[in-house]
Length: 308
Image 1: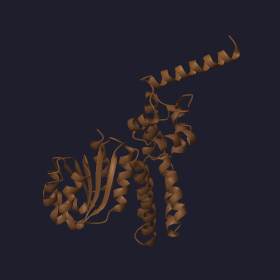
Image 2 (image 1 turned 90 degrees about the vertical axis):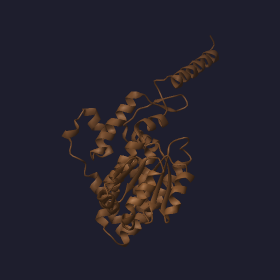
Image 3 (image 1 turned 120 degrees about the horizontal axis):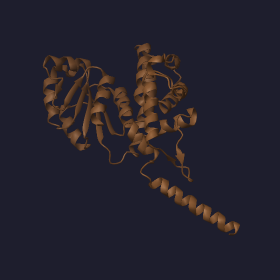
Image 4 (image 1 turned 135 degrees about the horizontal axis):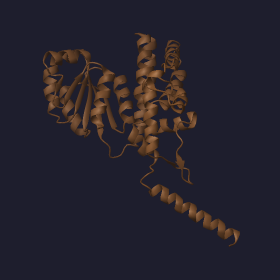
């Protein structure tokens, strides 16, 4: 057989092999790995490129392909970083077969917190944006929020540096939600709202967490009038609702919870004073309406129930 014919046959066989690989139920693309693990594709690619944590198969056209072993590996990575271990340290731990209870959490998060506090105090917008891009590309949103943003906000206390920091980060989070909108087709939609008081930061942090889990989010951070809420839920065709309720709504807790029951879909209500009022009326867990006092706990519990 001539050389040109041999090359043509080889290319034909490679194409057939690639089609077989793509058609195999054993392998799936990165979007499927993201759905199975709750880690967005940007983070998965960062783990591969920067840290060598994943080694997907590749088609001739360069498309990544994964299998169940990759799902288990991602779950292993998540277990480590949920314990406070820096993602840069995880590969060595996996290769050593280290046990979770044998490792001391990394100080890297303390360094990141200190850097954010310093950037906020010096009103360094570019520095804050740079840190946001780096951390949110390397970690799932719930880990980045729990171990970086919330402790940093607490250290900043109240005042201009905190307001400036939240403003910069809010713009970043809003862009994140906007960018994901075009990628989420035919998936459950969550309405995230702040009722009466402005809770934009938490609304968009919650959206970032839920987007990682494959949900679509519609964020309306400041709904002023109670007669708007039911029409809003129906109008955006939300399958579930996450709302932040503040102090001034505590005296309306019973009325609001009964109204939310009429939405006939899962609802999580978050707010310390609202929870106290609901608790006094024995209404913190009423049908599909659940009330939480702490924001991150409420978002995570809502997510776990919604993604089942």
